Length: 105
Length: 138
Image (cartoon, each protein chain N blue to C red):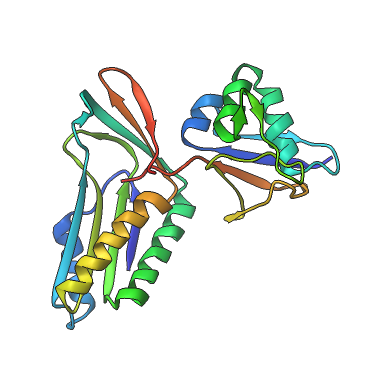
């Protein structure tokens, strides 16, 4: 079972009260599984806010695209400095970073 | 080129000197100083708290400067941004552009500042007398 790391910044770091954590995911799990199941599953008290913060929702329900993947709001999910698709199959050692909309200056 | 994400900014004087030494073709240095404003709508701001993904932010700032050099033909530029807690009235960002002429210097300066605000992974939390808010640049 692959182990993947996740880093959070800004409002997400504050929401989950953690900068980085690891998840052991099932073989074949994709990035969307991490965001939809594993993270809110571990942080149940923050799961509603998590979903409504990073995903597009209607009346609390996450909107899915034609390929069944959830639609992100203006959040970026990156790995190795590059944006990755939500259908990316997670591998052992993957380091995922979830970036809120930027606010410098 | 110099980009920097840090709890402190270098002095403007030292950055101007740095740019001046980089080329004898420089005829203008345009400077932007971002300052923490003390109001938000009708609320009194107490301080801002910044955090950054430092490696990605540095890379993004380098790319912004490289793009500006290509597009506007500027000679060089410096971009520095603070992290951590910044009180009202203090500088939070310095952008300096060295160019042969002021026109391309001003154009590049405005573009670099906008791109740093919208395209670099830096986040700020505004702490006011009423509460604290994460601010997103739209």
